[in-house]
Image 1 (cartoon, rainbow, N blue to C red):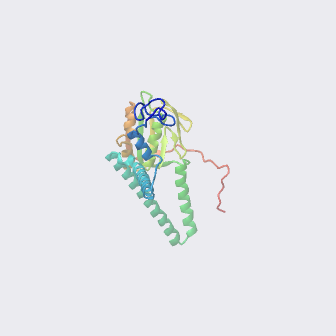
Image 2 (image 1 turned 45 degrees about the horizontal axis):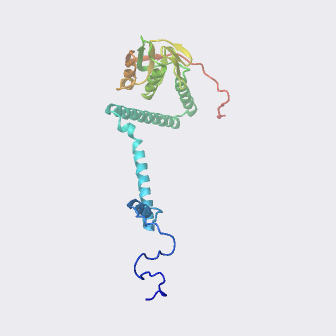
Image 3 (image 1 turned 180 degrees about the horizontal axis):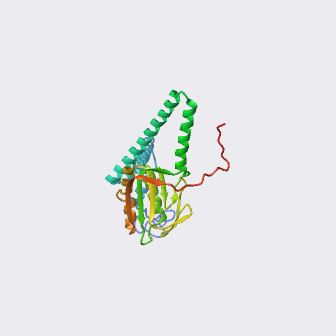
Length: 269
């Protein structure tokens, strides 16, 4: 090869190579396992079968939640003691028996009306008897019969109005028909107010000892007060003394004045 063909005298294959065209390229980054996992999960690619399975699992979970909630509604009875369950069952039986007795009494009255030769006179007698019964409930007439006397002595002044109200409610649930507290007749809207040691019943101040005169079945009234965790035990925790006495002759003679309604009138001509 002459100098005309290679003026600089450079060797054709020796020395440095010519630089490639364009800017230099950065080295390729390595993809990590976390990046591959993220790319595989997002955005989600759900098939129709996967979507159906998801909906079914959601429905199953919702059904289980509803079942657990409905089961927990019975937790009060499930956690009750055997004595309390027996008492509740006895009260239900007593109420059922009272309803059956009332049903039989009404059926007897109907039979008497149908068979009586003087139906008008028989109807008048039954009306007077019904008036007397309603008068006892309303507190407008005196009552007498078997029952109990509940006496609560409160030397420390710790018996609160709500405790006396609990005793009243327990007696009502056990079938009390007429009640008097320290000379105040108890009716449907009777309430206790005030503070411990300063109790009022229907706005009238009463003082310890608190004496309940109750007409009803003694065999039902006394056990209702003495159930475990009931009225008697609650009062005794407050250092009160509770005495329950059964009697064949309880007199409830505190009366309430008959109140004429302001707006209601009888629809019977």
